[in-house]
Length: 134
Image (cartoon, rainbow, N blue to C red):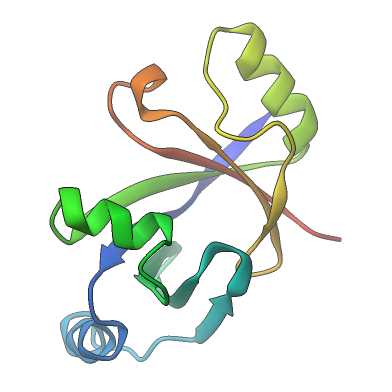
C-alpha cells in the first residue's frame, strides 16, 4: 500500500552550488548528504515541515542523472512514494499495467529499498517506490 509522498527528487548539475542555493531558499541547512555509488550520484536531503526534498547530482558522466541533464534541464526529476511492502506494491503495479524499470528493488539513499516506474506508464513522470530498510 502507498503510505505517502516520501520525497520530491530534483536533478542538479552542481551539488555544492545547489546546496548553497537551497540552504538560502528554504532557510534551513540540509540534514543529510550521501553518495550512492551504485547509482553514481550524490544526494542532499532537506526537511521542510513534513515534506522531504532530495537534490541529486551525478558523480560520473554515465550516471542516469548525468544522462537526464543532457536531455533535460535541472529541475524536478522524480516523485517518491513510500510503501509498507515494496515487493507487494511492485507486483500490484505490474499487474495494473505499469512498467517497472527494474525487476527487483535495490538499495538507495536514506536507508531505503527503491524501485522506479517508467515515465511512459505514469503520464511522463518518473515515480520511485521506497520502503524503509528495517
